[in-house]
Length: 407
Image (cartoon, rainbow, N blue to C red; front, top):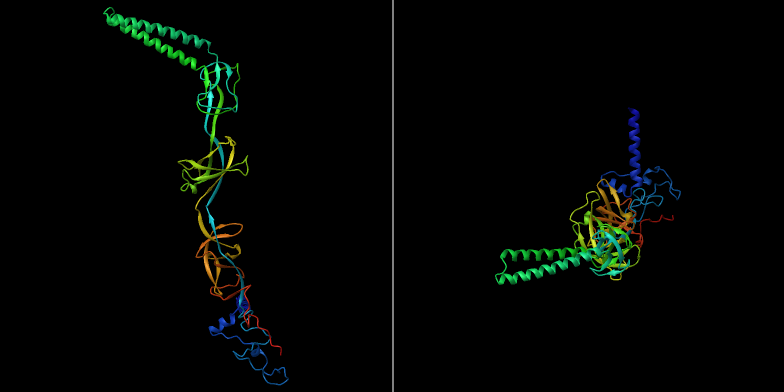
């Protein structure tokens, strides 16, 4: 028990000594509460001789007379009364969430896979891959001899049925044909017309045409191949515009709207920026990736962009503005982050919240303004309201290190 008590006393004494000799202004703080520390002169023996050899006790320097304790050190412990020197840097401003960059994939504004409308032998191809064609242009031709014969036979039957109907109508006017005969002639003429239309449709299906205008892709078949119905022949891409699909984080879902401008750069064409607009926004967030699908359209009049290219898409937003300070200015306590602001020769403590750390600064939220002088060096021993001097400021007469007397 006694040993523990002695250890406790030693720790308390060491802490008190450290406070007195290491903390600037400690003797003055103790004096204000009634604790006065003995000076060097008071600790000297009463009969100590002065420098002049007499036996009188040296006089103690009086306040206001420019005197100081022996040894030339200012009173007040280690560094007592010393003005602290700091380095400051002006706070600036930075923005977050003001830019978005995403990677997307391009597609043609219209794309159609052309298939054979009927089975048969491919006789010829009428266009070449890469050729630009209009809607309805002929791409290929199937053998159509049988369909042509059927169509001609249907036309002959229709002409005969029409002639029979005309004779019957004349006889009916002369009351030489009954109503039943007239109805039968009308029915035969109608059936003949339908047969002709059916034969014409079958003949038209022997021709392969393009439903849209665009650029012809590579052919999947060759002349002479036997094709079945729905056999893929080629693809037609309308590349007058390119639709770029990309994904953005869900926090941008409320600010992206149709018509917003975008800037795109094809990976295959570095340095060439193409402007476009947002053309479509999905109506739901992908629950797996927490992203929103967006589409943008860009003009492709020169034809340099191709479907399937990858694009870097950049968008700009108003964003949020916060003060930016040097990373060295940030200090921490149990209450959180804070920093020191220099105002008229003194420092004041400002609590902040870290918003974002960048390589050149830290964005914070607090009672700061652009241009405020923030302490970045010499922050270790500062206290709220302490008087400080800037490193590049001139030292006033009678500065923080008075010199010892020569005598």
